[in-house]
Length: 214
Figure 1 (cartoon, helix red, strand yellow):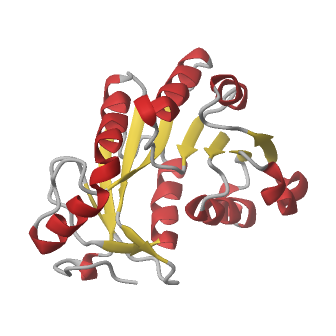
Figure 2: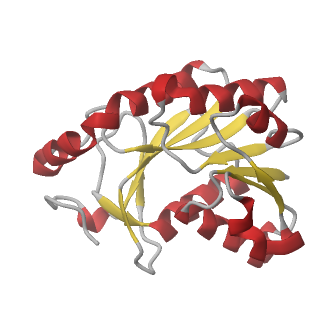
């Protein structure tokens, strides 16, 4: 399987990359990493193909997409007119790539209740419409997509999370980056998982908290 990670120097992406390159489960995956500054991942050497990719550059995204099977975009698209999401969708269609996992934020459906939901909505408001539009573009694209509605993230060493789907209330408010990476890798192992869905991922023990748990 050919697996492309875009915005590949992101913290979650780095965890995903490390596990793919070190665990036997993923030994058959050929990894391509796209990022603005390729030298940041030069320590990976020949273990992955590393490409300079500015996600706002359609040609660069198109070049990285060549012969890929599955794509993970480790950035929430807050760009004007959602140029990142549009570039990814267009490049996938041109290159006949059908499976994408795309980072987003919790709260795009007003699905987070209570005091935390109120606080989170206020905090994310400046970029909320672009995040909502990114999810809508994916849902209308005809691609096999999974939107990841990420919680407030922490660097705890545990993998502990619950997943809620599009029509369910969001459970939890925070989660570890290692947990998010684990959920992504489950989809990589089984691309039919959460196909054409938007999933919330968080530590259920943080449910009911008023503020992020670090």
